[in-house]
Image (tube, rainbow, N blue to C red; front, side):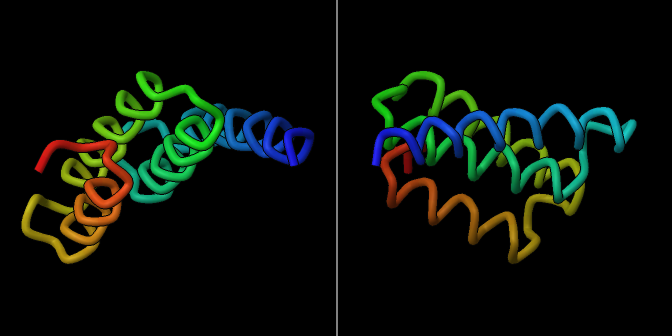
Amino acid sequence: TRGNTDRARELLARARQVFRQTYSRRSHRRTAKTYELLALVYKRNGGEEEARQLARLAVQTYEDALGAPHPRVLKAKRELQLQRLLDE
């Protein structure tokens, strides 16, 4: 429902803040996962452009934290491409 989605967006945005404050480096895989989830929430709520920005940020953060060839990076890219948030 719309109320649940709005609440999820609020919670994920708050999680994003907490992760950025907790982990001094931007390149932490938990922060990347938060960006990835937040991108999906925005997409489902019609926030296509913000979702795309967060998807790119998620992938960049995963790459910074784990290295580009890491399986988690490749999985995130594939999942975000399937959601049409990243170009192939």
